[in-house]
Length: 272
Ligand code: NAP
Image (cartoon, rainbow, N blue to C red; front, side, top):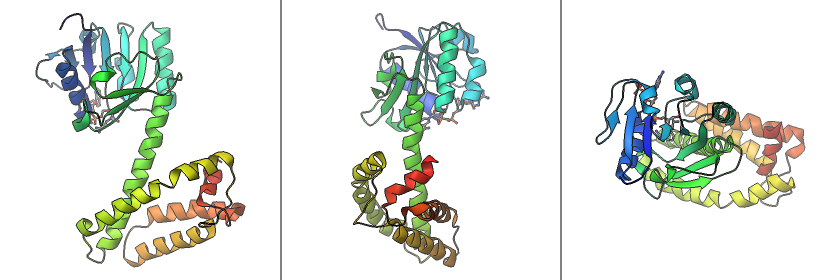
């Protein structure tokens, strides 16, 4: 163990358990606390958060900030907060830490529990540049001085994930309504997604320069396409929430003068 810091983990759900196990693997002396009794091999379980606060570093991984905040006290020396929240929740906790003399690191986990401690796991963190024990969980990536930035990146990236998964599930339901299996359809979907992802740098540039002239595909034609998508889903007896939401947003941008512009112009509507 040598002179390694002692670490406590608060919250032994799916993710917290993976974090505690990764710390053990890295040779840390680990104390764990969970609301309902739970044990992790080669760690010391304590009955109260206060007992866990005696460690040099306290890692929190609870379901929400609402659950976490009442547990925190100024007995903590260093708090590594890995509970997901909004940027404002992170900033509020950073202010609380400063006011209470607690060193604070705000991090978000861009991985699933099974990836913790592998090269696939990235831990974005912001505010304090000292990443303390984060290296045990994956590659720590500092994203800025403002403590809210890790949460901002987290939600931005998860937003892409949820929109993609929602689009995929809608597509599987649509082709499935005619008996086409996910097994047959998914290779087409992944190849299409890979192709689409190559368009993002140019789209990003357009949102930055706000120049939306296009000789590729105008918003008008995409609004028509989304109308067809919603209609086809309705005809096949499926829910139309996702295509209608996209249609309505794109159509608003069209009404506001972007019909002849590229899809990137929809950001003008989002920024309102
Ligand atoms: P989870 O399996 O549902 O575990 C939730 C944890 O919060 C458990 O330890 C639970 O304790 C505790 N908890 C819930 N309500 C509580 C309360 N009122 N008082 C005290 N403790 C309470 O969730 P998870 O997947 O581990 O996620 C934990 C955090 O990691 C979340 O913020 C999540 O967004 C983030 N995260 C998760 C993943 C993932 O893939 N799972 C990925 C990235 C980030 P009990 O065991 O007693 O219920």
